[in-house]
Image 1 (cartoon, rainbow over the protein chains, first blue to last red):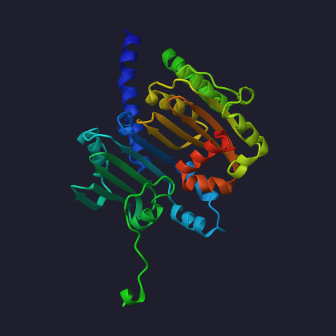
Image 2 (cartoon, one colour; image 1 turned 180 degrees about the vertical axis):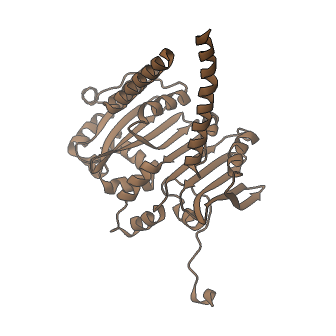
Image 3 (cartoon, helix red, strand yellow; image 1 turned 135 degrees about the vertical axis):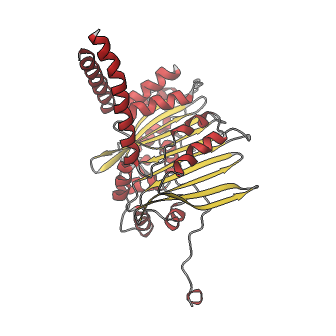
Length: 193
Length: 179
């Protein structure tokens, strides 16, 4: 009887520990968006890309880019402080391959405290583009870009201090897809006046 | 108490097995994993050289060092699977591959093409001052596993454009020269 009682008590205790552990991990991850809920879309997609540049790899990248080469120096500056770049992108042959629930699984996370939407562009032709930023105090903690249209679903999540300008410059590099964000051009003398 | 102890011991045993597996010769483990999952057999370079198949020139190229444009000289490990059936649940394969390698290797990019049933996986790990890169490519009838060592300079090229550079690594190791 005693052992039965012990067994019965163990389950809730383990469940409580699991909840605490999950909460701890979620807190530690900060601006990291959980993207695994989208994994099932790869089976339906005509093309899927999954980029994972985690903190270990970002440290490697920071070392790999040389200060001697101008282009690499530029990338090195862009990635300084970034703790992770995560991309999931799916292209489909037909419409209706992903559900509203799939989009919602991402948007729900981006409604969490600290996140705010910077850009919300919707067009019938080009779909929608949403850019979210996480503020941690007065520092940028991360960015997320959600780009969806009828046959495409892309989510880019950058963990660390990155603004839109940096993100635009990272397009096409380190696995960040072309999102159509224009980097701001340096102002000419006339524009400044 | 006994149950908890047994569970801990089992978990420890499982973890040591996983770590041991990942720390060993991962290249051969991945080749074996493909063979087991898809029930195929890889062809070694000497065999291909004897039969004069398209990869025959690859051995010469590797020996001749042409592939060191990206890879460090003498660092290439290559296993090729030609004209075999790679039909199977690629989602399951991806999960198994990630489970096996995630301890010691860092996943960089994974692309799946449903249309061509093509899968490309690129993993990376530090090797002292240099970096080991593992590129696994699986198509409908062919597959290859390539492991190369990269200098820091070439790693920067890979990181800037992982998809194209990963493809270039595989192509350098497997495509025959136009003669």
